[in-house]
Image 1 (tube, helix red, strand yellow):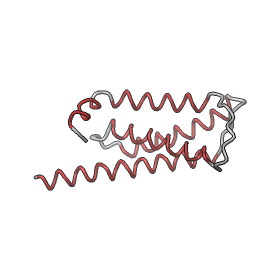
Image 2 (cartoon, one colour):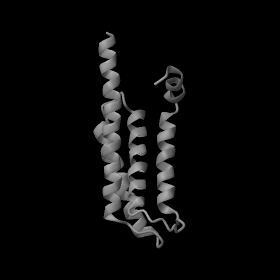
Image 3 (cartoon, rainbow, N blue to C red):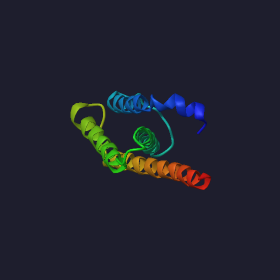
Image 4 (tube, rainbow, N blue to C red):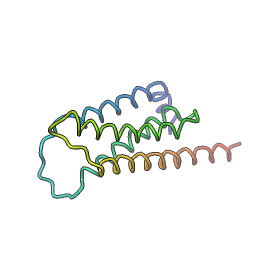
Length: 129
């Protein structure tokens, strides 16, 4: 990552992670308009992508600390909590176990991508030494 972009994100990544979390919470609890899209399970792909992004930003915010497993656990728990809230406090959204699976898959994909990206960075640093 270019140094200039690193410096820009350095102090703002936690704010971005919180913003992504709030956006997912908001979008998960509002009444969404109906779309006549012919792609089956498109919403599951959207869930997966949203939680991939969520996980990536939280891991990036705390990547120097050994809290990866706690972050993964919290992101999965957040996805479950959202589905429970959809089921209990809204009458226009439904909680779905397939959404929980899509959310959890997104978290695991985000974790995998994060590990691959930072593994390359660590290998490059070791080669430079």
